[in-house]
Image 1 (cartoon, rainbow, N blue to C red):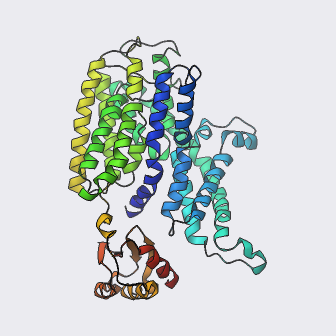
Image 2 (image 1 turned 30 degrees about the vertical axis):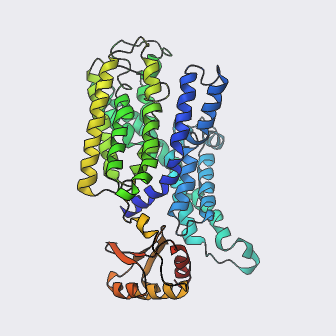
Image 3 (image 1 turned 45 degrees about the horizontal axis):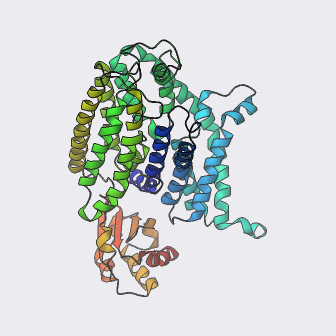
Length: 476
């Protein structure tokens, strides 16, 4: 769980850049929904400007995770993450696979550039930095030692990982397509199952596989294509059933979840939480781009994401049962909702709005109850209240001496498993918790000691923690 929460914190920085980009794309699409910028210069500019980040979300994740998961948040880890990302997306691209095998590449390789690969690449970059930044090489190869070896090792490790990915990724992708085809005949129940797995698969980027079954002409459904007249065979009251239920969730449900997360944030972190959640909620409502909001709690509180997936399935099931149909070309936000009202297959527009109100209330209550009952670490509910700790002034100016005393209280260098820091605290993982002497650490002059888990120790330093950490790292 600690690893997932650390991953979630690493994603918050790239996630924070996405809502504005999504809104720009939404406005551009609203201006020119049929030409996607071909008919209007302003629409083109907005779509391209927003697409700079939205279309490269996986790359942003690779960089953010590489820096956030590395022990020292060094830029070298970002380069290693970028190298890993480029290696996977090029070596396993459809063009490369076709050239190597001499046959047309599996559809799965056309979807290799996704958020999961971005996160995986970031983890590879961080791993290589943590393990090889002090790598020693023979003297005549000295230039390639230390941190310069990190991107090199990232390439080598990623190339090795590409081998199992080459076999595993198509199996997972085609397996999900087969699974989707198996639930085609279940009607509203099938729509609910689809909605559940659509959300559940987003973290690993395989939602594209199951989407292809229901939205396009993989299994003869082509819900999206038939709704907009791109494929013949649409049926009034049926076409759109696999899209309609996303509108209550994206336009109203997730903003309700955002409100619950903001309300449960620590009092002195509400502004910080609002900065992340409000813009992401607006993006979800207006454009239907949900990733900025989903990735803000997906890894910090996985049980909330599971609840989100279940609620999505429930609302798709309920909507499919009712005479309520709407469709999207972009995503299930306000823009596509309004644009679809005049579509011949659209019906029950007011029912979708009522379902939206129900979704808002349901998401708000479920998230509020779960967060409070399980003390989940959503944005603004981190373990430490840094707003007060930023005011702390330690008496020591000799950071080496302070680091030595803290290390002694932690049981010495041999007892340190992992050392990192946030804005105000040293975050230490120890091998033997019984060797930790809190009284000795406090006697060094620190502001406090927190024991959040069995082998975790957090030493509150204040805003000068970076200087203490630098000396601490030298000692271990």
